[in-house]
Length: 419
Image (cartoon, rainbow, N blue to C red; front, side, top):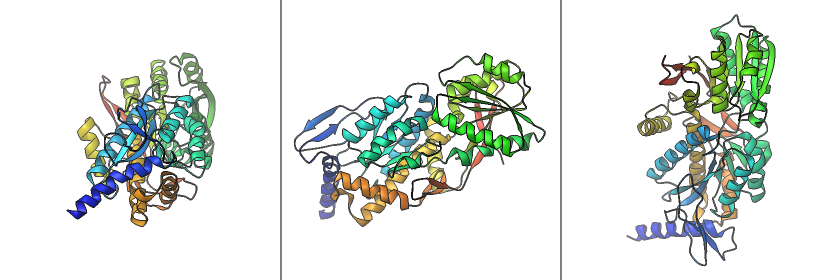
């Protein structure tokens, strides 16, 4: 009985300490709405504090794109994060204290991301943030968290120099310089005779601009001829001009760096105009939501992967089962990376709690100590074993390439992993 009372007391005191740390101890914030698509109602009180609907829960921010043309990616991240919350709380959370995910929609632009970060840091009083979805958003919003000394784990920010934004910025998403070349090499393996390459990229997206540089360098490194580079916007839907210009040069391979909606439409229009060669899609096309955009014409697209549902290990087996039970399809990379990001927070908090109880740390100190712990930990995630360099770059060993296989009527499809 005494142990039960002690645990209950610890749980009830955790949130109060977490939430008063940045407010000088005079006012705290109450958030009662956990809908992923809504902003919590924040009410100042004088003496008590709760987070979400679970008193004593440790708040972790999730700032990803749930609306806009980026939502096809962000919705997968929400799914992965929610599965992680359920899984780790079923295992006891942080040594008996549950976690509570606080969702903020970044939409698809920098302004929305900045607002989401500010809300999570200053109102929701989170201990750290998973997000944002796009590298472009990270370059704008991560410095805000850096100044506030709030840990950030990027779940899908793969552009160059993301960890260099600051001491509190890390990522579980491997840099594009490591992942992207694998898909070009897979294309060469399928067609050793290919020579001419056409490249398309979204010029208004920081990640796509970073990724296309890697793709173009890989083309040169493989001794291939880069016949054209065509630009577009992520908001574009008509690619007739760029596609026609490229097809007239008779490329054997087309490489696309964009997002799911624009990239899918570009794939569709290339095929409709008669292009029959191989297509490589970048990381922004790495989502099953792409399949509903180009349907049967998605068939054959090659995309490098930082995750495989077939990766061995207990944690991936549990994640894969939970995802397939919930969504009736195999989990995608963006969901796995979001799950892994939440896992890093949970296991870093557990390790920190074993050294100095987190419910005895004021919020500013907890954020600082948590950031240190994140960087020195080793984590067995659905992505495989990962760790971090001292600047927050992910260290990951396993990478893959998948090829999209579609039914002839376009009604269904899947990512088939190549050996």
